[in-house]
Length: 453
Image (cartoon, rainbow, N blue to C red):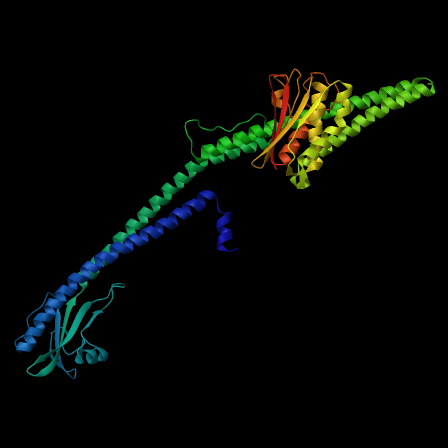
């Protein structure tokens, strides 16, 4: 298992604390490095200034062939000839050369050499910073080496490193603790929401998450979203229960009627005419069952958007095909169907839109009065189609659930129709990426489709 997989398996709080710790480590390391660099630069500058001043005084004494002056406490001095022989040296050095052969060669050819002897860490004794230059004394070249102790400078830097390490470690621990407490506090509502969701998963009903009303951060918005989702799920479950109950009732009614017809027919001998009437009644109920089953299958098929196939079609021809089957029904009822549709081309699935328009006309002719008006307009790529009548309109309590399956404006279920017409119309609108709504006008009811085309 690689590092990424291992990190993904860790709890969110642990990952957050690790992220905080890693980020703070980088920040503290950078800050400590900057402080150390600035202090080291200042100490080195001071040490170099002392070394340069000491070197200058030695150079002047060698040129003047006067005794070499003493330097800072613990400083060392050495004078060599061009061949590297020691002409003068501090007592602590005796005849030990401070320069390497390569450095001697470089200084003899005019270069200035400066380097450190010993290291800061690990701690070593006799740490020096030396500088060597060539000077001329009495017409002869001389190599003057000046060296000062680095003890105070190194001790200050080691103390600084220790203090920075201690402060950084303390800050890192404090930041990690604060990050842990903050992460726990921030995720506590999420854990509470998870517990509430687990309660729902165990079958609890009407449970909602406790979301603080005085906050509006990401967590509370998540809580409101989850509660909204729970409301939708509960409403969906309620619609499903009602759908099952309504479907059972719708199926039971024709089946019961068929069973009653058959029982009566079998109870005693019947004439051929009576048997024919019974079979016709049974055939009507069977057709009702077939229509109901087809309507339910159409609704389920419309639930999948891949069943929708858009194509260019003339709107006038589509509406004419939808209106034609209902003209005879309107004529028998003494009704008029008025159509006002532009002769334009739209993109839609005529296989579904045509029966949806037919359902609207059928509802208007069955439940409304007066003239049925079908109007359509196309503007900025959208089709607005409405079917109105001059009837009493929809009952106010029916409007919010007009598009529910098996919903009927009448309280009784004995009226014609299955209550799936408007549900089918809404499903067609949604499948096209549009909307459908019903309303009452001054003269009756109206159902309006708004579809992209």
